[in-house]
Amino acid sequence: MRFGKSFIYELEVQFEDVDSGGAVHNPNYLKYFERARNFHFKESGISTKELMNQGFCLAIAETYIKYSKPIILEQKIKIISKITGIKKIGLRIEQAIFDQSNNFALSELPVKFESSPGLLTFCRTKLVCADLKKIRPSAFPQNLLTALMIPEEKLSEELSNIDII
Image (cartoon, rainbow, N blue to C red):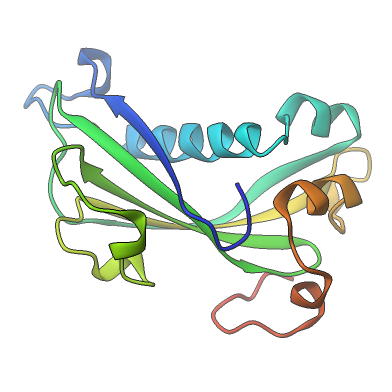
């Protein structure tokens, strides 16, 4: 996942993901968002396993989810992910789920996914870089910043709507 760039992850809802009414059970939305984030990090050259071997992980500090429409069994969906904020020890990722039949170019999406037409679910997650040995927040390792293509000036400027400490 690169700073400011959107990525798409697609999947089909499986039987194991739904409740007795055929709709995705709420905790599974978190799994979908996590899977999409990890896929995009991996596509950007960031291996979770490598990061952990270096003594770091990206831990969820906060998650906000807005459910607009239910997602149902065998529905094909796409999850759009984008890093929208960054500080020295944390980042904010916004993600949106759409039906795969909703054909649009990434350039057509509003700056804020939350107001996108056809939105099924919206998620804003704040992740912190954690030192696994010290069990506390830590500055991002340089190789992670390089993989994310985060400009140095973005780390020092104050960003609105992000309060990771």
